[in-house]
Structure formats: structure tokens, C-alpha cells
Length: 194
Image (cartoon, rainbow, N blue to C red; front, side, top):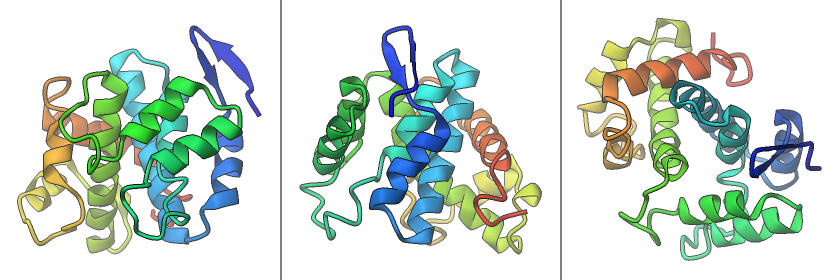
């Protein structure tokens, strides 16, 4: 399943990451969330000069265990890391995915990929919610739209604004939102958006 080796990371091709995700995630909404998070991570990595394929894979696979844990957030991430290690995924990526569970590892993110995953995980949902308000037209979502809606606590309430704000030492929020929208536009058809 490992396709290539880049630097110190073993990367999967996007199609292989999605195939692995499909083995464990069956809810269409959760799949779209994972793909959207991967798209944000890919674009953010490109913006920051990081390995875009590696970051995209981490985004796609970050919730691979979500249906298996049945809401037990004490297992979230750890079960995912176990699945990924069993599939031969780079141990460092498995560790990043394990640590993305902010309920177990709050305030302990230092690596850019960990910080990015926190922000992308919540921002992807926020951007999708903005698109749905616009009739499913992601193409109509702007940085101004996302910035305004992010201030409304009741809008997309499950999207943790504090986790999104973790990106600010790396990238200012308006620029991050622009990157997130741009990344998701590349896969808008996969997300059921226009």
C-alpha cells in the first residue's frame, strides 16, 4: 500500500488513502469531512513548503477509527493509529493522527502538521457549512463569508474555533481561510458541492 518514499516520509497516493478509509468509514458525511480535511491539509502544506501528499494523507485518514469507537473519545486516535500501523503506514503519521484527538492531547501541538490538522479538522466543516448556506455552492464562499460565520457561535457549532485559531502563529486566519477554500474547491465534486 505504500507507494513512494519522499524524504523521511513514506507517502501513499491519494487513491490508496481513500481505499483504506473506505474500509473503515461508511457514513457519506464523515467521508466528505475526511476528504475535505485532506484537501485543506494538501493546500496548506503547499503554501507552507511542506510535503503536500503526506499532509493530504494525514487529513484523509485522521478519522479512520471514528465509526469503530462508537463515541468513546478516549479511544479516538489511538484506534486509528493502530489501524494505520497495521496497514504499514509511516509510524510518524500514525502518531500525528493519534495525537489529533484534542480531548486527550489539548495544547500539546508543536509540529506544523499537528497544528495544521487541528485547524483543518474544524475549518473544513465550517467551510462546508458556509457552502450549504449558499445552496451547496462552494464557489460562492469567500474569506469574508467564513470570517463572518465563524463569529456566530451557533453556526456550525461543532467546528471548534479555538482549534482553528491554533494556525495563527503559522498563518493569519484570513489567509488560512483562503487556503482552505482553495483546497476544497479542487475536490468540490467529491464533496457534493459546486
